[in-house]
Length: 457
Image (cartoon, rainbow, N blue to C red; front, side, top):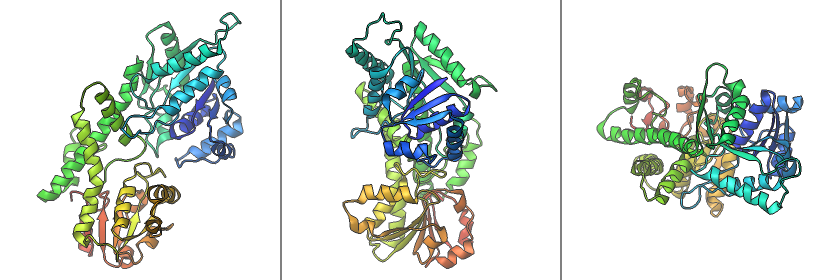
């Protein structure tokens, strides 16, 4: 099949590359010409395991191309995925500017029938909004309907993504479900069959296709992320209470996770959730409810707990070392919002490190892959306070960060941090003090002379 993907962010790039890997002819479009040039050279702009190899392989095979020409992009694909960003607006709503711009581009340049697939996470009703945008563009072109083909013919599909950063390739290639939202019409039924054919290579072991109306598919994505975010905030509230009661939240996690009705996933206490999805999607769902005269009080609490959780960790540091941190150097292990990615969007490290710097501290940070993206993130956050930026340093080795530090902070649970040489770590630190925001270690390390302060332990 000839496929176009509009947008080469996380979702768009993974979608385009994986679809090309099973034999489709895929064109990925982006308005960022520098990014397109990097991708043409085989360089991935994001860190995702296996992605560079897939890009290289499919570029070489001629099944994958990266283009900055919108006309060529729209005319190439019989199926056009919209995978542009939906950043959060100031009021928490999803900013649909990029999505509607992509739809307008389709309407402006399409010839012949197109199946338009909305892949970005968007509020309920967006697919119908995109239909209106495309139809308006087509009407403005005043194309005659009797020229041999009907350029007005198109169908809209909602196909939300359920990719986890760090394992996105595996998630796409071996999905646990494929949600397809279509219009309730003959065109919608035909669109279902096209999508079934498209996803057949990923659907061989068992039928993972879930068909539903457009709005239901859009809502399903938000509901899924909201549920996962709720589990995280619930465990963080339990952890905060566990600290007051002298209870080890890790044992509690095992005790409740063993119940098959609950399970272990997303039950880890820590600094809260971050990344490109959970924070903005929870707030967008709250905003959608408010537009319809309702309050989602559970999700409001989920969002509030998540915002406060970074402060809980900062309070632990202040309680132990005092409010004035001007003479303290902190080693930080982990900057990305989660392991196996360099994504700094809503990373807890941004709030924690900024708070330390504002209290006068110096920070020496290490992340296995996110040092460069973290540097850009802190320049964005603290660019108006250059004196603070001067007190952040980055290093390529965890023990270099720890050398001479007054305390070690664990902010991302990278596998490489889980079993350090504790003898060497104790020798490197000025004092054997660890603030563990991810509960990586067994509190038994206190028996090795460490002062260990974690979340609910």
